[in-house]
Amino acid sequence: MKKLHEPLLVVEDSNEDYRMLQRLMQRMSVQNPIHRCTNGDEVLEFLYQQSSDTYTKGEDLLNSKVPPRPSVILLDLNLPGIDGRDILDRLKQDNSFKQIPVVVFTTSSNPKDIELCYQKGANGYLVKPMDAQELKKTIQAFVDYWLEANTSPVLD
Image (cartoon, rainbow, N blue to C red; front, side):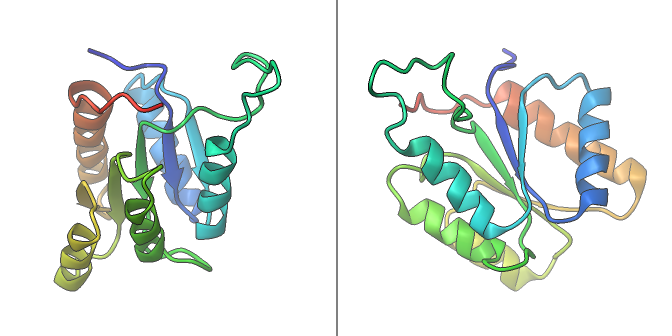
C-alpha cells in the first residue's frame, strides 16, 4: 500500500547529498511530499511549529501554512549546531514525537554511533555508501520499506 500523501522529513545539511537523494527518489516515482531541514534547530522549529495548536479559530487544514506531520524522518547525524544524536534523543523523549519513525542516514559506520542511535530509539540506521549504485540500492530499500511496506501508528 503506497502512502503517497504522507510527508517525509529529510534532515541533511549537504546540498549535494540532498539533491542526490531527491533525484533518486524522483526516479523511483516517490510522490510523498519531502520537507528538508539543514540543521538541528530547523528540525525542532519545524516539528514544534506544526505540533502547536495552529488549527484553532476556524482555520482548517487546507488554509493552514503548517506542513503535515512527517510519517518518517531521515536524519543525518553530523549536523551544524544541534547534531543528529541530540535531535534523535529529544524526539524520542518527547511524547508528541516519539512515535514518528526516525531512520538515521549518515556516513558514520562507527559501531559506537550505531549502538548509541539504537539506544536513543532510532528505528533504523543506514550508512550512506560512497558508490552511486550502492546509494541507489540503499535509498530503494528505504523507500520500499518506510514509504511503502511499513505501517505506522495513526498519529493525531
